Each structure stands twice: as C-alpha cells, then as structure tokens.
Length: 410
Image 1 (cartoon, rainbow, N blue to C red):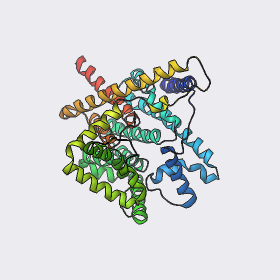
Image 2: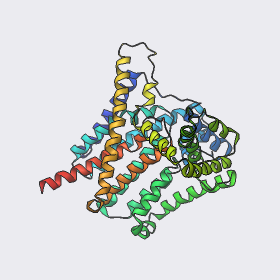
Image 3: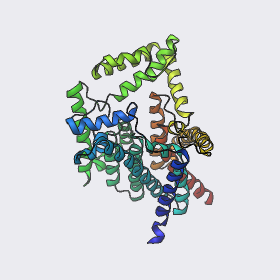
Image 4: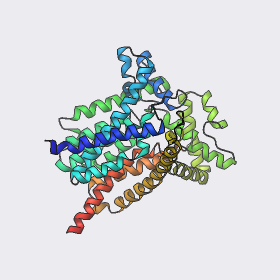
C-alpha cells in the first residue's frame, strides 16, 4: 500500500516546501485587489448570495464557489481567504492529477519526474496568490482530461460522460471552456449516443441544465442568450481596440482609449451588439490591422513573465530579495516563451500525424491549440492565459515520448 502511494505523498511534500520557499523569498502573500479582476469576482459572489442575482460577466458556478462562506454568515474577508485556500487546493489537486494521468501512460517513477516539471512552473504557482479563477479553471480542465485518459484505458463511455460534465460546468467558471465542449463533442460525435445514454447521463443533464439556466437568466435580465458578456467586452477593449489604433495610428493603452471609455455608457446588450458590429466591420474593412493586432496579442501573451512576481516588493529589506525576484522573473519569462513554443509545436506536429495518432494525444493537442488561439483575444496578460495549457503540454510530451521509446524498442 505504501509503495503504491509514496509518490503522491512525496509530491505533496515537495509542493508545500516549494510554496513556502517561493513565498518566503519573494515576501509574497495572498493579495486581493478591489480594482482589478479580483474585485469583479468578489462582486459576483456578493451579488449571488446577497441579492440572488447573476453577474453579467462572472458566471454562476464561479460566483457560487467563491461565495460559499456567505452561506454561513461570513464576511468578505473570510470569502477572500476561502478563495486563496481554494486556489492552493486546486493547484495541489492538479499536481496529483497530472501525476495520475501520466502514470497511466508510463511508470510511476517517470510520472513523478514529469510532474516535478509542472510543479516548477512559476506562473501556475504564483497565480494562487491572487483572487482569480485560473487555478480552479485549470483544475477542472485537467480533471476532465483525467477521465478522458481513463476512457482510453477502459473504453468505458461513462468516463467521457463525466469529462463532458466537468467541461460544461467549467464553462460556468470561464465561458471559454464551452469551446472545448463543442470541439470535443465533434471529435466524439460517433460515440455521442453512448456518451449521452448511460447511467451517468444525469450528471451531464445537470450541467447542461445549469448552463441553460445561466443563459436564460442573462437573456431575461440583459437581453442576450449567452453565458456572459466578458467575451464581447474583452474583444472590444483589446483585440478590436488594438486593430482600431493600428488603423488610426493611435497609441494603444488598454481601457484608456475613447473606444474603451465609451463602453461605460452602454448597457450589456448594447456592448454585445457593438462588439459584433465592430468585429464584422474590422473583418471586412480593416482585415490587415485586425490580423496584426491578433499577432500582437499572441506575442504579448507569449513573451512576458509572470506579473505577480514582478509586483513583489522588498518590504522586509532582505539582502536576498532582489536576487530571487530577478531570477524568478527571468525564469517565468523563459518558461512562458519556451513552453508556449514547445506546446504549439508539439500539438501541431501531433495533429499533422493524426492518422497514426491515438485519440488521447489528439484531444490534448486540440485543447492546447484552442486555449492558445482563443487567448489572443486579449493582450498584456503575461502568462496568465497560457498557464492553462502548460499541464496539458507536460502530459502530451510524456505520452508522445513514451510512444517514441516504445517504437525504438521495437
């Protein structure tokens, strides 16, 4: 028994030591910023639990998870602490899931070494210290991938049903996950009947009903049958605005241009209509600059280090702070650049040889490329969006590497 679980214990121990060391050297403690995205997540939780309303940008499930302590009469401070605890629980759980997924493909010793690579990724660790949704979102993706890997080992469709359930729920944490549901649905369309009709279909039905409830609420309250307005706002303020600035030779400062300030005077429905009209117009009449803006967003998100590390300050006046801050900034930047390049290259190569590929590698590759491409709707996010596909890259690399050595042995 001890032999079978020693790696899990060791990974948790290493992770805890790593968190303590990282936090101590950078003087980094959980931080809540009311004027950044953190504030909007807390507001969504307050709105749900205090007024019974759903926010127009932060979906229902995320607000319900974040605001859970409100059920017991807790104050905002407790909810914020709960959010940080949840982040670290999700990060630790993701570590174990990465290990378990890889151990289905190769030996537990190799899986342990691969998982250490994921633990070392600074961006994934640093985001736990902010009141954001990334850690929960990544955990849900990796958990769904775990059940997909179980399907390929057992050929039992219940695992695919659970995976689709998790991805659907995850779209109520970050709406971008709905794209994965649709892409994976197309991939498994031949097995749709088996996925929908088994003893676990009640779980899938619950997730779909909750999704429909969210969309119907938004339709009734704001006028559009959509999960959230965050996509329209993000496009208009980032990708669309950057393309507009290229066209008119203007300086681009996110949220500070006349276009961006215009949104403050509009309703959610008007913002969505404006964003749709703007996208169609730019696609037809400003195509080159829209493409340039898209490439700029890709470059911006792929070439920077972690912003949380950059914001650390030497409040305790320690002699070693500057060394560790500089080192971690450089490492996080290199990790973002190198892992982004490797992820896209490996995923693209895997899809090119799809006929000789197993379905699990294809699913991982599709997820990596989708997250990478959709993240370019925004810019100046450093590694915030790319850390979502880093654990998928570690898993994909382990799978492809294992296949390579098996072929070599033959």
